[in-house]
Length: 111
Ligand SMILES: [Zn+2]
Image 1 (cartoon, protein in one colour):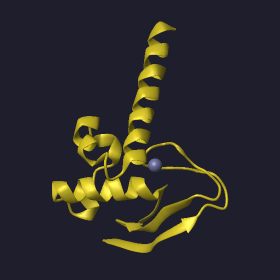
Image 2 (cartoon, helix red, strand yellow):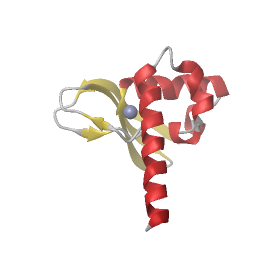
Image 3 (tube, helix red, strand yellow):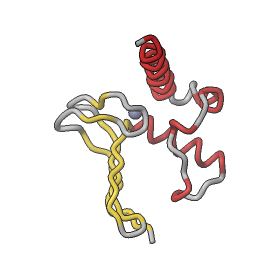
């Protein structure tokens, strides 16, 4: 059974890492926090507000139920790109995270 206990927008009192894009949520930044219970275990989902909006928009397009939602990392940039006009920073953070992952992967191949 899934039960959301907290679902709110708040201002960061300290720096956090967005669980959708992996980039920093700086102190003082308004962001989204959701906490709850899924199958008997507590979860916490702290993300940039626009990463949350992008996540919800993409999963609504898929017709998913919320417990079947895919994380943004599961989408190709080509599947996200059409929402660039609505969530430009969130799409750019997805691109940056993937490019940095690619660079790290290439650097590991050279070592
Ligand atoms: Zn984010």
